[in-house]
Length: 214
Image (tube, rainbow, N blue to C red; front, side, top):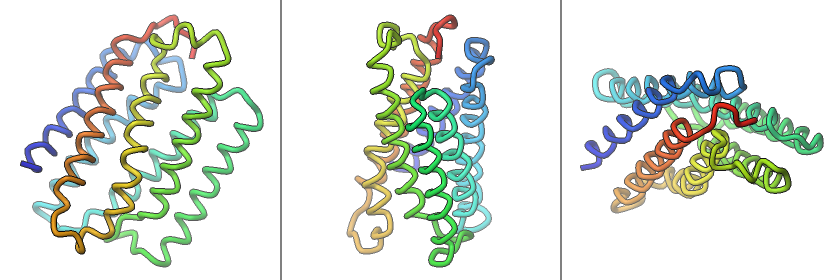
């Protein structure tokens, strides 16, 4: 069952990437244009992860460790780009800096090649949640709130926020799978969160207004 749901999750990722490509003209002149490439990267990375685990080695952590480093770096830069408050921009730079420091230090305790970098992921995901919250507070205090439903970044932020808020506890518990009698519910929840996130992306690409300022 989990394999089937997992494959469905990858299918939804693929759909999101295709929709992002179809509506690329809406945001191709904004910083969000790189988000489309990251969605395709996500699809390729997840398919590669499955193939490596099934046919090469059960250790596929390295491609995910690289993936998360790229994804988190882009998200920090994305929100720093659109957040206007100078102090908040500096805060996001600090978040990114601390993430890199934690990532480097954690390498002495977890092997990048065969182990998922849990602590850096949890730290970065927490920083991203804070960054999204700052972004939401800013748009609530501007005229952008009147057009928020037509704003692509808003829908991307909703999807990311829902995913990471639910995913952080999952990542904390992930290291203890071997001590759990059944981790099925946790894995299922994580897949469902990923599906919801990509559905938010799809809504944003379709519903967003090309003239909407980001």
